[in-house]
Image (cartoon, rainbow, N blue to C red; front, top):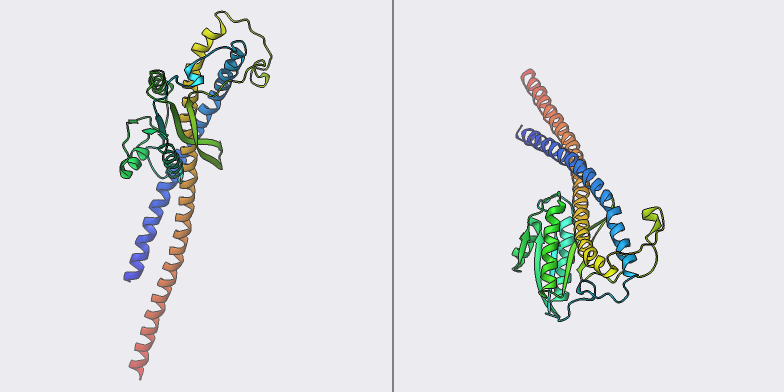
Length: 294
């Protein structure tokens, strides 16, 4: 009887877990859909900014900027921003990002001082456990807002132009498909040298235009380059959010399926134990009747 009660209690607990994970899966699916739409809507804008920078740069071949060329004087300090989630239950999302971040940090500290900033409670907790100082922990949540990211990017621009850091890099999860997300290191500053020459990408704009720049191409780049930095950082945060939601959706589906499988196993064990108990009781009754008749 005690064994049956224990199995029945476990069956109830497993059913409760399955309901919880199913609910979390549905929530993650809804958030993934919304985040995916935001990422898809932002990509044409980011592509247009990059193509515009390339087009303008082709008309400013002698243009120089620390945002592209790097700082005039090296300080020997690099900044790394690690983007993780605030919550767990999202598969290997945080583990993969933190593994790449820690590997990159160890490689960088051999040649420069590394300052760590985090976005997401899991990243802050990881570095605290490792005994690594976190310069600043940003609270972004799982729905990044452009105004918030723009303020962070502007702070990085100010610090970089003031000569506080040689490079600023972002470690985040990049979204490729539902089944593929990779943790990568992206250099935010200095920006990669824009390719010169060529018109705007016709696959993005649907046309090929030639521009006459007023004000000058150099003045336009002074505005476009900071915008490129802000757009790139926002895109990284958006893709991180999409990756988090899709990995949580997959993890919760797997947990729900496992809970259902385990529930079926417990149900078989319960029926087997109950049948054994009934058989034992019948045997005892028959034995008792036989003893009385004898």
